[in-house]
Amino acid sequence: MCLLAALLLTCAALPGFAAETAATEENRSMGVDVADWNGNIDWAKAAKEIDFAILCIGQKMKLETRTAANAAGCEQNGIDYGVYYVSSAASAEDAQAEAELVLSGLEGLQPELPVFFDVERSMAKKLSSETLQAVVRTFCEAVEEAGYQPGLYTYTDLMEQHFSEGYFNTLPKWVSQVDAEQCSYTGKYIMWQYSWSGRVAGIAGDVDLNYLGDFGTQTCDHPGVTYSYEENTHIFTCTECGQVAFTKTEGKKFAINSAAPVLADDIVMKYNVTIPA
Image 1 (cartoon, rainbow, N blue to C red):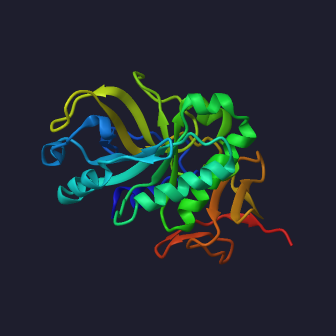
Image 2: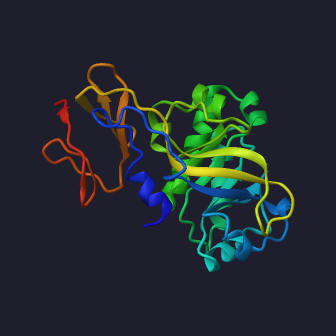
């Protein structure tokens, strides 16, 4: 089972289950994110030190030139990889164009990890929260419709301010907070970028370092959950405190049988669920 598949089966924040979770050294993987500026990479050497890589596929409506070669290097050396795109969108229409560009760059690639949408501070400063959310959702829905797993990358404060409710909790999140002993983001996330100045064999100079694991805090342990359906998403919220317990996007494996959402053939999580008429 690839790294992402294992994580997506364990990362849902579920009431009545673990109160607090944080990936320890024993259950997290270490990897890098790289772009054209990292130059030619010796992935055979890098594979001795890393478990995964996130490859820049483009930015400012231009595709990177080394993505395919880096993807091939990862595949040849048993390194799971995903990709990221640095957005400069100012509208949902821009985000749709960016998604189409990224999808063209993904032809021939088979990433095991998500296609991350990168929201930088310069972009967030120019847009209202509503527009920013529309941009992210447009891109991610287009990527998902094409058959890839979308994800979201941004900084801890921006994740907290703009992307910690509703639809955005259905996305695998990659949070950047460097030079910190621990990431302070309190929501669920699968990856933490903890350094911009790492060193890895086979990569010249500084490289960004990341941990992949089951990160975040879930403090709600109330048993009652209410079901609702909104914008192609099945939503389970805590009856007592209103916290979102579980979400599932329409079109992916999902069923309600005796009030139980089914994540996989052998993984069933049961709830005391109130289903409205």
